[in-house]
Image (cartoon, rainbow, N blue to C red):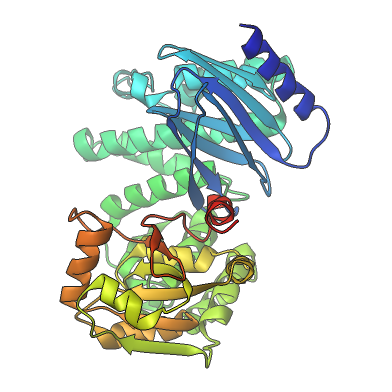
Length: 454
């Protein structure tokens, strides 16, 4: 008991001494257990870094990070999922004595306690009465939302939570409700015009200002609704200049108040995930003619600037080795290597390229490590080559063959299914030090490199 209070006191002391960082500390009954946290990396849409930690032998853990703005942060302790709403420099302490005991201290602790105890999806406490209410005559979504968030209004009126917390939590609950509402419409009420019109009226009134992670949820759930509602509708020929991406033409039917956001985010996703599919410079010009210059067009411009400036320092090699250890010995004598396994069809791989921190190469250089890209596409060398050049993957790029990929699967994955992206660290003696190293965007990588190369 004294140890717990001592730990809590140290947290509060840290919190009130003004360090410019966010901190989540805690103590769990789960000793040396995995803790996964999903940190937002920017404000546009639902981008986050999955980062892994462990509690120590006494169940204590401490996670430090910096938020660029107020946002939601998801964390999983063992198998307990939590959602925290944080602003810059806010700190949280979590106390988890047993499977049914959970307490929060620190900033906005009243809100974090109520939200996580009442809206934890694994406890089956999310909006169980939506289906019953939706069948009531003259159902109004916003009235139902008010009933679900009365506790938020109460905490705000008593100044027990900040305005930022209130907005983030409200958006999160609204997003979850829209998703469940959408699922009910698609499964049970496709032909109920009143309920479908009500959903549409909610979209017409949405005011998306900045796409934090919670508002991104509202966006994607809205996309799902627009997709099934408009999949058979035809766009008039006179309006086809407003169709930016033929693959997702249902976004043409978005409410006017949301088109800027929906098309902007869709284009960013396509630039990141499918860099060869369209002439994105032309689409960016078209987007700007429709919506002007905004946060989305600036993000697109930044991505395209990087993609359209190919380096002369790109070397692509069709590897002939059929054994992974032979591949290492042949190519990396007396070299430390950070090997990036990827493929052109792997969305998370392509996304990681776009979010790699600018100082990542500097970090590798500090430890005298060479970054090497290794594609497992196998049967499409030309596409791999074009994508490598488009993404500006500087340095050595190897293109695998079937035998070598099978060898990697056996050595790195213990013959289990091959999943990517995957990162492997090899020392100067050809020894594999890590078969599953953190991603470039994961701050845990720096700590691992310190331990491997002190």
